[in-house]
Length: 108
Image (cartoon, rainbow, N blue to C red; front, side, top):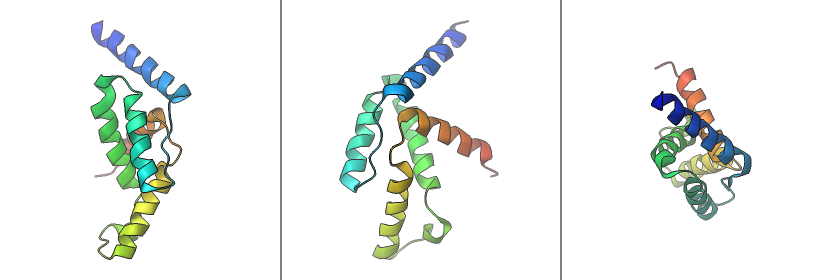
């Protein structure tokens, strides 16, 4: 019963964060870092680590195959731009849902 109540609370918190929470700004690296901090801070503390893991999964999923082994400054800049574009305007709820979708779609 306690597990059900906790799950219900977490779902409600995510729903509220998704409705009115801040969004990630991917227009620049500075904006990305600042708004990720704002999105994380809008969540209950017990969801911070889950959000961090989800964010990493979603961020890495934005990188195209051509940039997986990027070494040149141009390739690294292009890969970073793909990540910023992919994360731009997402909120915490969208990040968490997309991470779950990516995990479900994973074939490894």
